Length: 135
Image 1 (cartoon, rainbow, N blue to C red):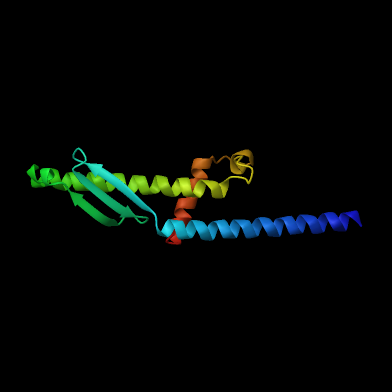
Image 2 (cartoon, one colour; image 1 turned 180 degrees about the vertical axis):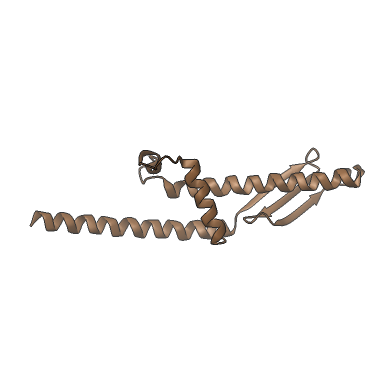
């Protein structure tokens, strides 16, 4: 009888864990849809905002930046956009990190046998999945 109770308890725990994980994934997807990154260049005179896909959603050019040559201004905009993409990726990685950590805050993935992969490899794979799912 104790085996049946233990099995039922383990099953209940697994269902609860899966339910919590699904809730966390839905919340992450909602937060991911609102995610933005920021990049700055030309001494802060050019600022861009990008969405989770890296698409430009905002561009602010300080009037002092208009003193730059057209080539320099174009390069500053591109540099700021690249920084914005790095920023949004870092934010997305940080947002995904709790999804691969255990409920106690210990890194469950790092403690598990990862078949030779480290947490950065797993986060990169999650980025790929997120990209494929347009999250």
